[in-house]
Each structure stands twice: as C-alpha cells, then as structure tokens.
Image (cartoon, rainbow, N blue to C red; front, side):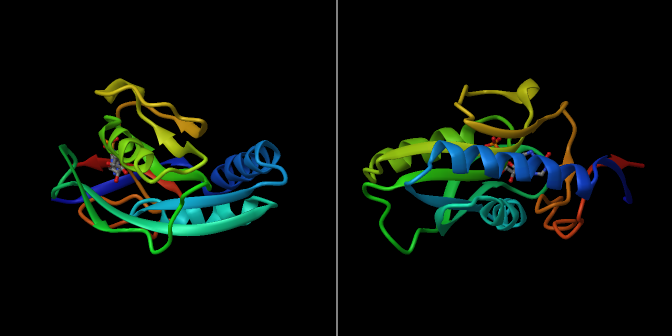
Length: 174
Ligand code: IMP
C-alpha cells in the first residue's frame, strides 16, 4: 500500500499560527513562570517551535504517552511511557498536544495532572478534529480546527513515519 500526502498547511502557515499562539501565551502569563509539557511523541516539533515563540520564563518537560496501536484508530487506552523528571507543584502548566482527536488523551492527562497540584493547567493543541470528539475537553490555545482526515507531518505520524515533514499533510491511500 502506498500513501500520497497532500498539503493541508504549509510550513509558513504553521509558523504564522505558532507565532501568534506564543504571543497569546506570553501575554496571558506575563510575569509568571510556565512549564510547557510536551506530550510525546507527536508534539515534539510543535513544542520546539512554540517554546521559542514565547517571550517569557519557560521550562520544558516531556511526557511520553501512547494512545494508538498501529494504524489510525484510537485504542482508547492511554499509557504513560515516560514521566516528567521534575515536579510541577505550584507551577503554571501548559499541556502541549499535537492534535485533539477523540479527546481521550487530554481528558486522561488533565485527570493525572490534577493529582500533581499545579497552580493551573491549560491545554495548547496545534490541531483539533471536532468531528471525532468522544469526550469534551477544554482547549485554551488552538492552532487549527480540521476536518475528519488523518494528518501527518510536523511531528504527527502514520505508523511512526512522516513526523519529519515540515508541513502538515493529509494521507491519501491508493
Ligand atoms: P485522542 O486521544 O483521540 O484525542 O488522540 C490523541 C492522539 O492521537 C494524538 O496525540 C495523536 O498522537 C494521535 N492522532 C489522532 N489523530 C491523528 C492524526 O490525524 N494523525 C496522527 N496522529 C493522530
């Protein structure tokens, strides 16, 4: 089976949106410290760009999460594969997600973070697919709302491939 990838958002379009999110976050947290929690693997590219777009006091943490098996359907099971290295108690946390699809992952992570006593928890997602919602979750900062298509690139994968594409594309299967 071969896949064709058609461009949905170019690298330049993504850069403009990420810069705007960075400005918004810096304004909202002016004078405060922020912990950006990069939800691995999918948001490693987004987090790297977002962190540099925020003019403020930022610490980055990494959380390994697996919510999919092989393929494109959510298993509904969220497994923590790598935990934070430092406490987020009394910190302003922003969970950085590549995409909110069913909402199961973020719902689970919001529950988890409540037990870690941060000062606040916000969600920043690059993409949202509202057509697939199974649990409503708050998205405080959002890049783009997209249709029910499977997307890759800019950190997002299809069977662990395509994360390196500098743009976001839709997988078309022949
Ligand atoms: P959710 O728990 O269903 O919201 O799924 C969240 C995770 O599923 C994301 O962090 C992605 O890793 C993955 N995912 C959902 N939709 C896509 C997609 O279109 N392309 C690549 N990964 C996706």
